Length: 214
Image 1 (spheres, helix red, strand yellow):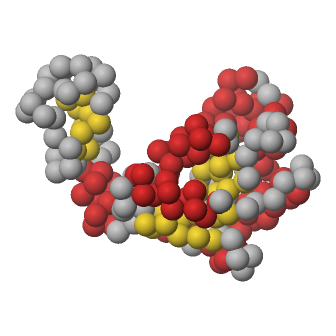
Image 2: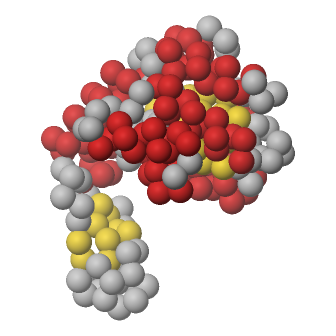
């Protein structure tokens, strides 16, 4: 099973990917993480990427494809892949088709977590975490049971991410729409795109994804 999970930052892609990893033994292939890992490991493609990044240039599609190819080669044939952050252009989508077919794989589903922008802004800007143990809370949806005290560890210091503000969230949404708009028609033509209500609770989203992939 090979799938692409789409959705803007805050839509819950990370949570749903982690659940698929745990429940189905799939591997999450996040291009940013893989680039950093390949550079650190000094793989042939990682060395190429390092040279490009040190010059302050953007990593080419060819290098990204090479890193994905290396990762797919390291996986057993029984392991499925979740593509996160790739592809972002039709050229990358076509490159992914070749990467998969060269390894006897096919792309089974493209699942988009559909979100309401205003609701997503509320979801993200209200987030805060315990500074000691990292447990997550929300101004509206999940306050500590005892105000000012973490339910999990009893800590009294909390923090918010500086980029969890309305302006940043709306900018990320616009970037997401601009980046995914080119690839959706490519996959819609193949009949493999499904949409899930990303604003539902996490368990409902998981159930909807499981129903799609069977």
